[in-house]
Image (cartoon, rainbow, N blue to C red):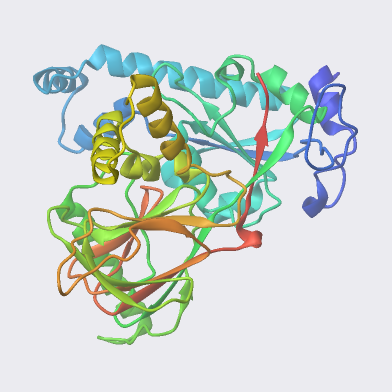
Length: 422
């Protein structure tokens, strides 16, 4: 059977060692790159799909014996539209089928994997991974890819309901064959997104993760899952109270951010922090966020950004204290606000991190000499009762009294993604 043009382009020169399937190509005219352009020529691609709200609601009530009609009525009582959820589900699945068929038409072996089935074996099998969902699915996919040479490509399968900052431009959702052709011709740039690694040590640590899924577990479910994972780990270790004091490099990498704090958000988080090898400082706050350049546009940005109203009030107080008079026009206040907020954002490939102490408590016992700032290494010692470390909003680790986490950036942890212009 004759291959389509995309298949011929993709297959040309792909019969090489598994570790070397990315071959240098000459950049097409007008294609800029900060490094030699390489073609995207995988033999095997895993397509990891998100769980739609329709699928989630079905699974949630399936074991309660509800019929489809009962589910419709229950969703209506909750103020949710059954037909609306089904429509979004069909849009997602249709776009996933489009991506899969495009890859298969290009002669690529495809394995479709639900997010709950995505594991290390899938990562080892694939030459490249396509995230079919939104940013949440992309974050999940990226967390398990520890090989910096394995590309990850995001496709936004429901652009009307998902922003998809980490995905290909929206138009390629419905024109994925065109995206494939451009990728194989080298008409793109590699973007090496820096990620965070977590080392955990101390007493009472449990490096077994709990997957929170896209729909958050309740606090009770979250705590129960951590208790179960702790008991199972103790049983495997053959001891009732084993001492988990050996440092553990956790088996995930964070593309956006790591959050550390009490599971119950209304409870203050008590911990000690050391930045770049500096002295330990006792703190109480609403938790600690550590982000990458990729994550600096997400939660971290919203934690730290200022509103024009706040900036205007500070400028007025500053002018009064200094005895200076000047007009605070809307344009001037807006410019100052924009400049400050822009300073919170940094490039995804920068080898540094940004930490933010949320709502620090300052008194004679606790202080916060630096509420936020750039660093290369942040160490945190937990003094919490029921806390966790959450990686990219989807993977949770126990982090209670005596546990020590070290968050760093490492060149080996970079994630290989693509920039494909509109």
